[in-house]
Length: 608
Ligand code: F6R
Image 1 (tube, rainbow, N blue to C red):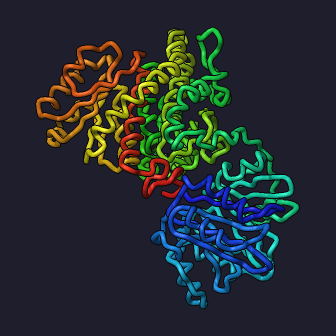
Image 2 (cartoon, rainbow, N blue to C red):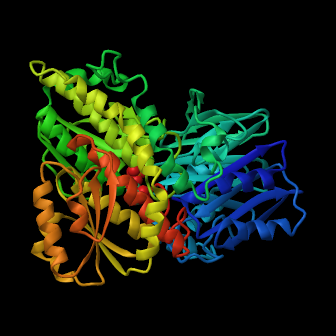
Image 3 (cartoon, rainbow, N blue to C red):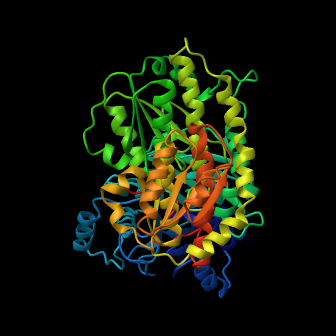
């Protein structure tokens, strides 16, 4: 959600900043802007729309500089206009600020600053920061930033430059990620490592209430109370290939196709060679708590919440522990009961989702032990948890989550096996459980190989106005996920339901124009789902079934079948979701939608 890049060094900063911010475009893309200092004067250029618009404006001029900041925006306060795009400047056009997050007391600060004579040009909360820093500027930018931030309530990741301190970038963080990239005689400040990966793998993560001061030859970190901090330099293990499209038309398609490999990566080093136990290094210090735990609460949002639902079914079935899955945003505001021996697990691809982060903070206050399942190493949720499991699947850049969903389920499966061996030593892990998941990558590949068939189906249904997704048991969360994928990238209205719930309301929608996708694999509720299919067919609905290979019976009952290989019930979601991801992708592409950057969305929702 919004992206920030700052650069100071000996390269041509405008180019470095543009290249960097393009890598973050998936985080926000309604407007963008850059500020830099050239010949002692602050310049600021902004444009509405994708970063290409900003690039056009910059390329028309002959700018040369070694220092600047750039931002791509996902609007929160104020429409996506040039005035509201970042950077925001003070009254004299001398200080420029880019900001991720929300200044909660901006109304109060704005009216106070206006009374003091400051003139505002935008509707954003961010602009108060530029004026506050102006107010406190008495020759030193970092002191002014620290003073300004002491008045601010809310969340921020900011980068600030001033023509009065022309060889300095000051950055600060509270609740919105920011890191320093340490290159060879150059420094970066970014909200996401991918922006500086081309230049360096060495990063320092800022903590909340910390500021960084970057000059051409050094960087320094302090608390906003002006106390020096000493930070560890960490090495990023991602490489450049992982953040490029690698010949695919979209990141989303690349990530769908990466799933066989990403699931192998999830399992690597975690399954003992004799296949009878699972090793999860990130949980070593929590083993005793997990053994004693009486309840697990999973908190997450969106796709990660769907993965959590699959986790609930697995953990209850195989590890025999009560599990609840909560929307993180609801959990934090409803004063939940957390008893002794409750474990809260946050699932978040980005590790930065504001609601999920707030939920674990709430749970910790109430005494829960916190675990995380995240993809982004060093992300805030991963760092705040007591233990956790990383997905290790490389960056997910397509805004619609795909490979993270399957990896989260695979991690939950390994966690279930681990919990079973901890808590039910008398019924040891069935070694087939491990063999079953090891065969999944190959099975996903066979589904990916039938993409042409899915494309034909997409052609038939691309003009639908609505679609219903129905599943039961382990496939109920898959129905929710299939519907979410379709609606978010194609803008077709789609709903997911437990199939049996259809007759309690949604059945009223069924007519000849309503496609219904049934996930009807040969599992313990297969017979029931056939009944639900009949109910739709008898009302002339069009049925697309995701079925198990070898099921000849179903073909006569439905309009179209997509077959997936057989696996155990618990692992079925890892297969049944693949055709739904591809179907959503191709329908969206055929409708001319920008699948990697769907309207109004952004990767990593760092505001509530
Ligand atoms: C949907 C999607 C979102 C995210 C949600 C949580 O395709 O990507 O629903 O799953 O915003 O994000 P994370 O997992 O980063 O916490």
